[in-house]
Length: 184
Image (cartoon, rainbow, N blue to C red; front, side, top):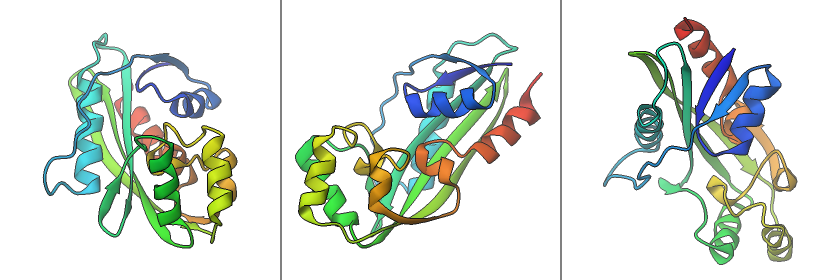
């Protein structure tokens, strides 16, 4: 089965391809600026829906879109602006728990399902030097929360409570249920 992925994330593509889907990537152009007072679940669901709607698809195509944000102390943390920002974000997460929230939209024709999944991630206490070494790899550059749990950033994590694939960028259990429900 073919899925249109409204995301440029290679991690989301890989997750879907490991399940045997043929994935066609369509890069959406969506303003990802949070609205004043917008909660993490509301933000990522709004963005996932906007990304899915921005893709021109045939009626039989299933479109999958997602957006991920990290929250700590009620603050929304997206991708770092630069490596100094990545260092600051990771120092803030060190030795603490935070929440990864991914909103997804699965759309087929005029039907769609939109939801958000939250997962708690516990970071171990990391030294400034460890964080700087990680940031220097470049892995943190394009990831919400400035780390990739599936890569070298996994060494910063003590444990994950909830969906691991959600932390990677796509809650597979929930997305697959929506794909099954909406597939022609």
